[in-house]
Image (cartoon, rainbow, N blue to C red):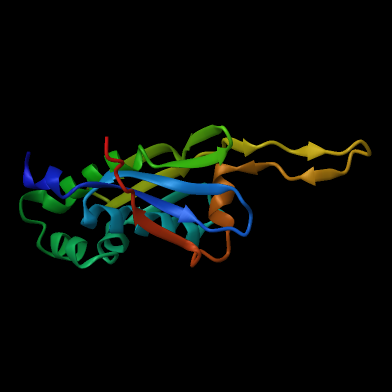
Length: 171
């Protein structure tokens, strides 16, 4: 097994609520450097919400971690551009998981990606998929709001979201 594969683990970003629902972003199998970048990109998107279409300059991505900054500043043999393409591939599998016993609902976060090496930006469109339907009582009062994936980025306080390495179960 290659060293890169050995260093990759599955990560989740857990959303802590006072409710009994377990919710999290499944970040996928990433290296430690990649998890910082992927979660950092999610934070950038959160900070730029309510736009559903977000354009992120390479310089903003490079500022997320020391590793990315070094790649960006050196960019020998287009290493940073290849790194961005790798991150784009990783972002495609990021999803929102919602557990409502006994079911697990999995919603992709992003609908569209664009990488422009010449203009040096990564562009993403956040999914408009509904993960919670609106619910009304008999008097037509809304008792539960409709929620979309894009609404996850409207949370004002992301300090309650923490990234964890997912523990593997022994078989």
